[in-house]
Image 1 (cartoon, rainbow, N blue to C red):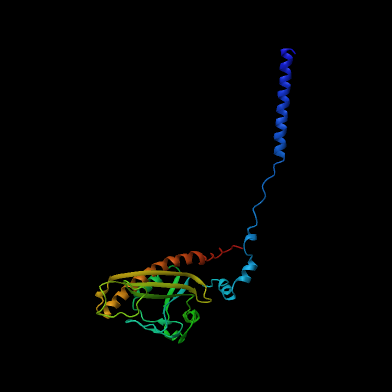
Image 2 (cartoon, rainbow, N blue to C red):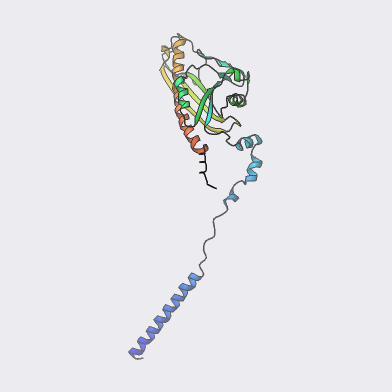
Length: 269
């Protein structure tokens, strides 16, 4: 075979090989199958019907509540404590599951002025015994009283204060003056609050704040000294709660206060 003929055969073989390679590539592209869609994630959890069947009726009723308050709105505020609550500066009123504290012992007038300055608050009212039933068992009695004041929203708060001495595992209920050891004493107050819709009890938010006061136990030489520590700690917790409430209220306004539609321009169809 001459050199020119040999070169021609090589060129033909190369061309044939190239055509075969191109055909296989095209055939491969033609047979490519795209991935399928994502899985139906509803298969891996309870369906809506299943959730309804498995949810307690009482809880389902709570979950189905919808916010009903109109903005701007009136706000009612009330402090509640345990049944039979009594301190050196305040006494709970009412019988049942809780009592209402009508005396402002750790609250100040400026605190309620802060409520009044909140965005979209038309007025702030406190509940009085004239508006309440003597028997108190749920938020319904408080919401009814708030409704009589035409307050669409109700803030309920409470203060829980514990006295502790170093070495005691549980809070003390009685402190014996004059025989307290030279150990560290601590007062801890947790202020808790919930913001409710007056009409149906819908919960707009729940918040909590804690304040601690520590000193030597033998410094408590009188009931007044102990109570001063109590009031100081409760005041600190309440101030923290107020700050949290202002932040919570801003979130409530952003989520629930719909802007009023502008009136149509005269002549607009």
